[in-house]
Length: 376
Image (cartoon, helix red, strand yellow):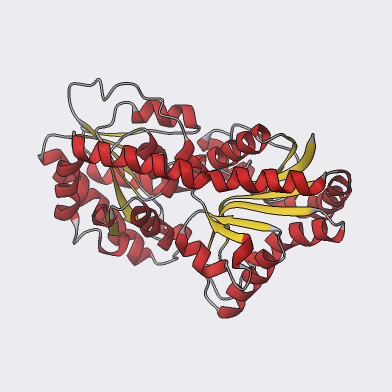
């Protein structure tokens, strides 16, 4: 049996990232590999379930100190481990992106690759997302790192166009692993009253502007109030624990007993929440993808190109709205919610698209098998 290190976001605070990692793990294992898990930030210790949201900030500060202390030790251990194995598999999620001109995301990504290549190991990158970049140098460094791999598959066309470079014969477009999530919700919402999920994002995580935060908060509140006027109940949540400052602010500003808050800490809790939804309006990409696989109607709030790209991928650009125009687009969003709920034609369209994605995702298995053949 072939043996590999699988590097992905196993220890992320984001439910979507952790689901990607576990689905990649299952895919690689099912293709005949014995796997050593490694979390992308630099750890062979896989923590599993994350701490309670009330503990997150304190533990985050401790972890920052520990990461600095353990950094050198980790890279020594990684080199020791990769020497004993056949391949490095790395992927899932947005692994190379730079939100400011000063960051060097490709450097961390490339360190895994360069150590594996130093010891003549095969390197496969699966269903990776890249971008945005703020400078051409950042993008070029990403391209250089990806070109040094044996095979690369991207989760969307936008990432492929950014990263493919001059080795397009070894690089392919696949899809995000979470699109392969089996449908687990058997029935629609059992509640008598229709419920809309609002998955918010805290804009301060990617933009320090308090004005933007306030405008986005007002947009969420206006949207929720309009949906309540149409006799919907509202659940506000996020799949990223760092968003819960915004979640709490939105609920407090609404101050309405038809608006509830849900703390979601793992995929089981998320699916339980989704089992009661008539539709989802959300910003976090994987909260949308997971809902899509469960046949929950989705409307996107795009804060980054990857969200818009996802709706382009499912041929539903009209269901995606820019977060910068949230307040101005409230009525359009509401109209799309009304259009999507209980829309049988939309459900059938999504079923067909998911079958297309399954065929597109097969390239990952093909590549893993090619690597096995080459290592025999």
